Length: 255
Image (cartoon, rainbow, N blue to C red; front, side):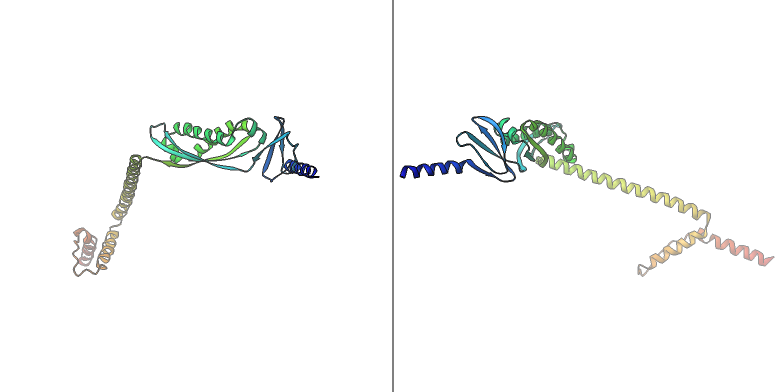
């Protein structure tokens, strides 16, 4: 009786171990006597005890951090760059059969590809054209991991660590660029002001009374400053139109 009870318990254990339940995002790659049978799941299914072996694979997107890499750019600048890779398993059978450890293999491939691509780029392009670098990394990784049944959806260069000397040089360059722009803008303003003054002088030369109006306006602006004493030189030419008019009036009265 005890022997039969033991056998029943062992049989139940074997049956229960043969029943597998996988979640929606999981697949089970089944090997029967060492030969690939296929992928099973999700849900419940039964394996043949002792004969079948299953390797569980997750189909969710994996976010892998690429460790910081020491790289020398094409213009001979030593920097440290790290990145993040987003990928997922599309074909579980290939991910298990074609490569020993697809997570480790993808990580190593991402590190070598990052060093290779960054080493072919200039520092200015790396800092200003990050989108193109990311696309190039994603294309290369996706092409190599396709044989493993893995789809690389995105690669992002996360951080670029520059030496202190290079940071100071870039700060000086940025400051010099800002000064250059300020001088160009100032010169452009002076040029436009000179053009406007030339146009104003041309108009005033055609209409002498405009100079008198401008003089009176300037005098009013100076008086509004609450100065106790205002010294303002008056050119003799300012009164020439009035003198001519007075002479003409006197000449007409004499006649």
